[in-house]
Image 1 (spheres, helix red, strand yellow):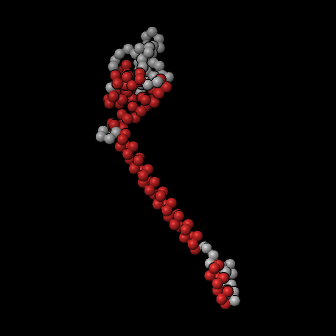
Image 2 (cartoon, rainbow, N blue to C red):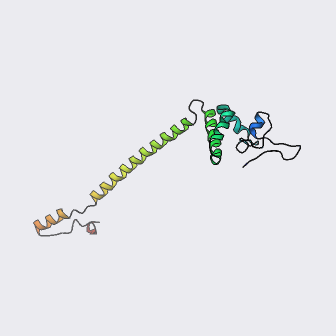
Image 3 (tube, one colour):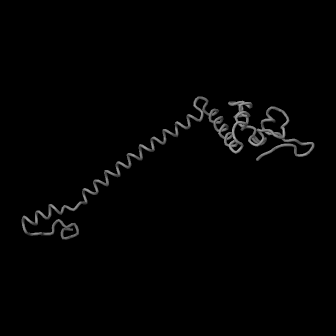
Length: 154
């Protein structure tokens, strides 16, 4: 985890939140592990939409192992909202959902075309033995003209 506190007696490093509010970063600062001082833009984006007190409340309410995921999720939602103020990440989600629906319909169409081609292949390659046998029985002579492996006419 990232902890930014006093390095020596003259120098102190604050997290991005404490730096933003120009206050001293306490030893048990809840923001320090998730908003390091080298990325102040991350906190600025999240703070713009959620506010520092709401972020602190959310961080306190969830288990420690899930807090990093919460901060990344809030940051993603905030950057999406900055890029698209009306829809935010919902616009991206609906666009991806639409792409999935298009791909599924294309897949279904392709599968239908394959099944039609398979059915046509089976029908054209079925031996017409019943017709051949009936002709042989009627005439009593098999000339072998219907044999596809007899190359007499090629």
